[in-house]
Image (cartoon, rainbow, N blue to C red; front, side):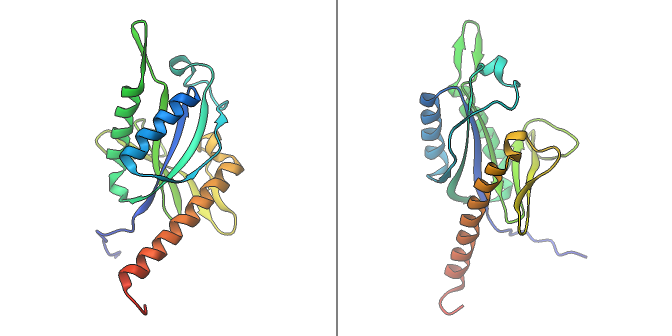
Length: 190
């Protein structure tokens, strides 16, 4: 029988953001830093052309960026992170006549040594319920020596080799953070 562990290693907080323009991107980053601390990795900002799912609500021209924070979190915090980022999306939305339109989409998640997990409000066959209306999806898995790899269900923008490589670098930083905290907690000579 496996032993139940109640203390798990912390994980690396990441975000995938979609924005309508550079001004909104900067505002979003300021809000994220205020809530979650500074970033240690920022991907290039690129046009988002993988789906038209967001176009009706956000517009035809969107930009994608991936971020990781210096802060490590508990896996159990994922639901609260998604609720907080959803509130930020609503607060940053603009009125367009009678309709409120999002200017930003913020998807929080985390990287562990073996996977990249994203939070979502939508259930599906490959998603697991976490808490408070939030589901978790393992979007990428880590395998040596290739690094992060996509699943058949992985979002096409996350599945790109250059995005997997970005998250490989984030994982390297995360592993260094874990080793540093282990050596600090273990004391001298360990």
